[in-house]
Image 1: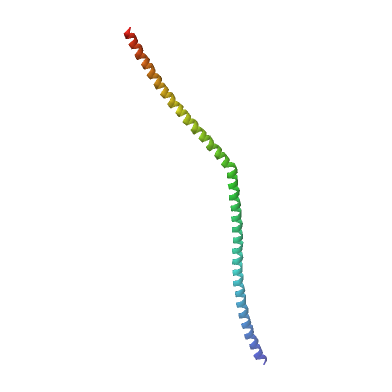
Image 2 (image 1 turned 60 degrees about the horizontal axis):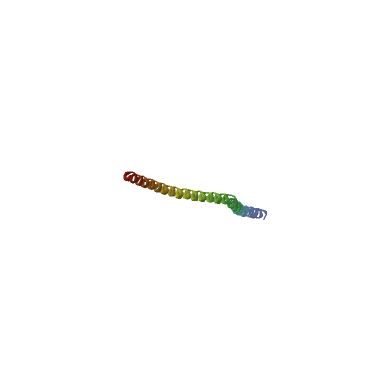
Length: 122
């Protein structure tokens, strides 16, 4: 009976070893899955943090631009409008002066014609 018991223990030991190896393989596979999920969760956390930082940066930049640069741009636009108005005024004044010059030349020519007629009549 001792020989049969030894054989039973040998078979039971082999089966137990086989079962433990399968369990160890399953545990290793589960550990690998758990590690992948943990890495994915960590990546997701970093992505969320990066997105939050990016949104904060964009908001801060927008605020800076709105407060600082927009005011300066509006001032420059206003100065450009004033320069355009001044240029238009000068252009209008120049046209008026050219018109007056032509009129003055016409009057001078008319005076010369009348003067020459007056001299001829004398």
